[in-house]
Length: 433
Picture 1 (cartoon, rainbow, N blue to C red):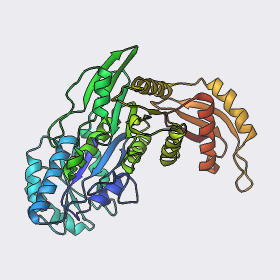
Picture 2 (spheres, rainbow, N blue to C red):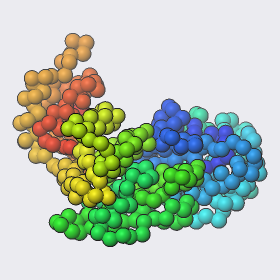
Picture 3 (tube, rainbow, N blue to C red):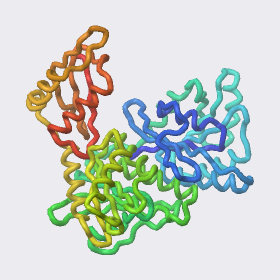
């Protein structure tokens, strides 16, 4: 269950500040999908053991009041559609504006949980002023100060109560999500795999539609394909549709085990592809990169290698990812892509016996121990794989605080070298023995 919190409201009420606080980031923009009219902010957050995605709907079009209001209204409608919980932010200093009223009007008709978050309540005297926002008729109000963080804990305690529970009876089959920019051939790939033309989501923003799920059970493969195709036409990249596709992609990506990221060989890897890749990595999903339209490229014996090197350079530091060159139209290597995804899924759920881990890793650590810090030597005694949905390893040692990033990366590379975790992000932890 992908839990998404959308922060809505007019500009300058402090949405980005609250977003930064919830995602514990210091930048206004984290993992934005670039190349759009206005960048979207979205990031991971966690509260009392529950993980969720926060989407800041900021960055509106400046223009006439009509355009302004229409753009905000559109975004609120999309947030209602896609989010699990909506935080409606207002500003205690300015009070209620016409735009606030218009947003409240839309939210009153929604069936989603809405929290009225009154920002800039930095002083006890302003608590009284905040009561004016009860007039929206949206229930309880939550006075906070997104700069100091006061009130945000109480707000989150209430918000997480509305999250969907993980379904223990959920489908156990591997889930592969196909993501990528428009026109890279996602729909054609699905049609080629399934062997028949099927309707894929129509690119109309603001209509209720879940990602299409296709159960694939042929040629010894049994998995669920989640399709995020057809969300926006390239000719009509509007603010709202762009935003809609971002939320839809996040949702589908969070529900999957392996993300098949499709690129267009004629355009190469672009900023938006890299953002999707890093979001998959951050969510600890397996990744396969599929370079489509390979038939349109003039090739010599070095073309594939050059293209591959360029992709790996752009996605660094996590470069241990299978890259498959396909042509969906010519039906070239499309099943190789599915085999690569199946292998990545296998790597993701792989469990390595503790004895084997120690037999392989301890001699390597002995030969290349962590550098001494302030005359103190770090001794790593024992390794084990932690339980989880993706590979996590704990290295027990006497001084975990002295182990730096380069050594951690060295250990990760050695694990990859000896145990094959191609396409899967690995987490390495150093703990006190």
